[in-house]
Length: 235
Ligand SMILES: Nc1ncnc2c1ncn2[C@@H]1O[C@H](COP(=O)(O)OP(=O)(O)O)[C@@H](O)[C@H]1O
Ligand SMILES: [Mg+2]
Image 1 (tube, rainbow, N blue to C red):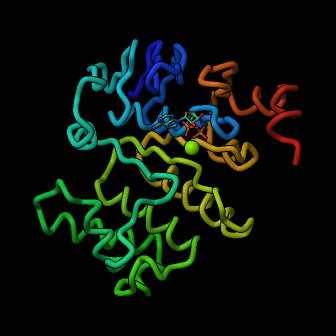
Image 2 (cartoon, rainbow, N blue to C red):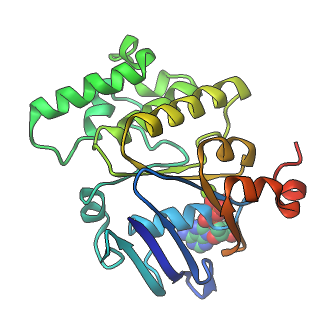
Image 3 (cartoon, rainbow, N blue to C red):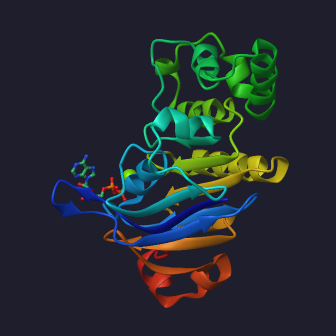
């Protein structure tokens, strides 16, 4: 469904991603594990066209998307939950959610998706008029995910959903990701430093080191791998 073929990117003269190849199939959850600075965010930015590959191709349902603009890519059905949620702090929870359906002109459909989001995230319903900037870290993360769902994506990209959250909240967030996976035919690509958590939602994964995929496999293969055990599953 989504595929990167030998993608390399540069920031100025500095190479970042190096010949990265990976794929995510329909209904599948895949994780990208990697330390700080490994290139995880760059990878997601490349998929949504915010960083253009120097070499290689990004394909979505067999068609190249790496030459398309970010809005066009988003309209093909790819949504992203950025690391810092990218919310509008002065706007209400509901206004933020509705912006997630920016490209949907059918108001009834937007309403329906809003109701669906409130079913998954009852706390957001209770706070629908509250300014996004006054939400707790966990609530903001939930709002970021809910907003991405408002576009009714076929592929959901998530940039470190556990980042900066207390362990109990991280569990809540990952329960929600698991629910989304169970209840929708949606491909999920989750980028994480928290390998423990990422491996609870993913069927497969890739390890990114200094912009290169150094390891890939099923969740079980990764969990049993010595490098993963020592470098990513220490805690
Ligand atoms: N816009 C940019 N210009 C130059 N270098 C960047 C830019 N964005 C990220 N980098 C560098 O690229 C590397 C990878 O960054 P990033 O993809 O954010 O890693 P990760 O998300 O895995 O922590 C880092 O060394 C970072 O400093
Ligand atoms: Mg990052």
